[in-house]
Length: 279
Image (cartoon, rainbow, N blue to C red; front, side, top):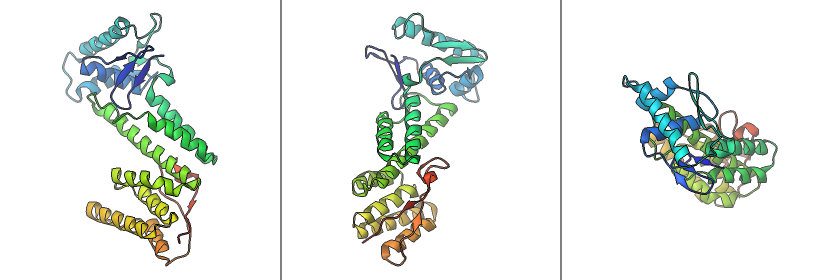
């Protein structure tokens, strides 16, 4: 089975393990856009916009046809696919790549995250952690890091990054429900460093530290977030986080709260998560 890997440097891996990449950047860009919309028709106009933006040359359509021709020739010359298997087909008003979902890492990633989300909703937390782990293992670096990206590819890269954050939130939430607070602290410290404005990650770090009996560190983590928000945005932490600080200080009784989570479909959509009892 040929594999198309886009989560990281773009590469095409043949059944025998050989790896290929078109030598022409715009051929790579054309294939990458088609693969992000696998089994869908991508119009020629959309491809032209991706390749040249708002100022395409007069020869854009002819040049696009040349790029498609070179892509097809590569698959034949390198024997990446069986002779009788069409891959890149012309479908008015544009082109389509015909692949199985398991052949494109983006499709596998999206499926695993969706399954993990469903498992979390059904309180199958071990399964959710396992599937998210498999999904995140597909990340070999920034998506399409070796391909020039126009407006359309940039939008899809942003979508993938948001879905990666959603996957991380699902894993943290599932591990929290499994009472793995102490084990999640190193991961959460990295996440708040990587995503300093994500209050959900900060809230889970504070909760994990408090649950592990490290109240002073939890309070320091809150102060770190407060400083970041003040310096970067001129804002205070959310009301939920301010209440969490008071609970750490022992000024308020334990309550039920819920982190922001992915809008409409992340951990928070599963219902409120109860704060641990801090000692």
